[in-house]
Amino acid sequence: MMIVKTIGEIRDLVKGWRDEGFSVGFVPTMGALHEGHKSLMERAMAENDRVITSIFVNPTQFGPDEDFEAYPRDLAKDGALCDQVGVHAVFAPDAQELYLSDKCTTVHISGLTDVLCGSKRPGHFDGVCLVVSKFFNIIGPDKAYFGQKDAQQVAVMKRLVRDMNFEVEIISCPIVREEDGLAISSRNVYLSEEERKAAQVLNRSLKMAKSVLEQGERNAPILKAAILSCIIQEPMAKIDYVEVVDKENLESINGEIKNNVLIPIAVYIGKTRLIDNITFEV
Ligand code: AMP
Image (cartoon, rainbow, N blue to C red; front, top):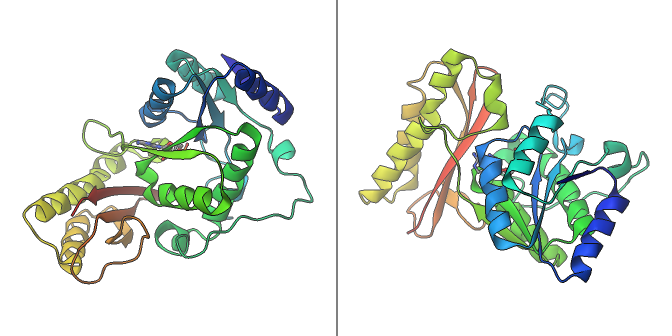
């Protein structure tokens, strides 16, 4: 497996593959790889002749008060996991090469990014859309793999591809969880042992919501209230948002649930902000 650091080298590599008629799958990540990332890479391996995983802690998607500096980085360990999965190349570009100092282009998707995490993390999705657009232009993959854990990101990526005519298919992959139900995240390493236990409340509240939906409840405010009251029972949890939205356009549902629904939540456990969600087909 190759670790490629420059744009020129990754372009040459993909060109060689294309000349041989290979399909190319792409898994963008920020590193600190875990079982969630692994599941994306394995799916990409099963569906493409060649797979590239990018490892890049993207500065433009972090707010000024967020954890860009502290974000866990371990290229050697990540490389070993990629090698174990069998991906053909890791693309770990240099921020200076990717972002020239006089860059002046932004990629903004309105509406979809004004809600949920977008409203809590101004500029976050602009940074994601910019870096992913660059990767799509540099690599030109056939398929790109994203985790349903970041459900809003998946919706934004699908819109980006549609609106910008990128020739790539966005594949959404299921959330991978720890045994106790906590969605695996690179940020889980920030949690103390006590916080780690408290963090189970996210999944617990969503599981409860799912069973309420399965029993036939279709009133969004009732569902939301039930989730809120479950989370506030955990003293270490501070709710950032709990929403019931349309799965496709992320518009808030304030009455009866009639279409496929996404219930995304964001909760601080101590200083760590965790997200999780469920979807339900109506
Ligand atoms: P990140 O490195 O956090 O930017 O994540 C890279 C990709 O892995 C994104 O598409 C995430 O949605 C996905 N991902 C992260 N955690 C999980 C998980 N627990 N299950 C499935 N996909 C995940």
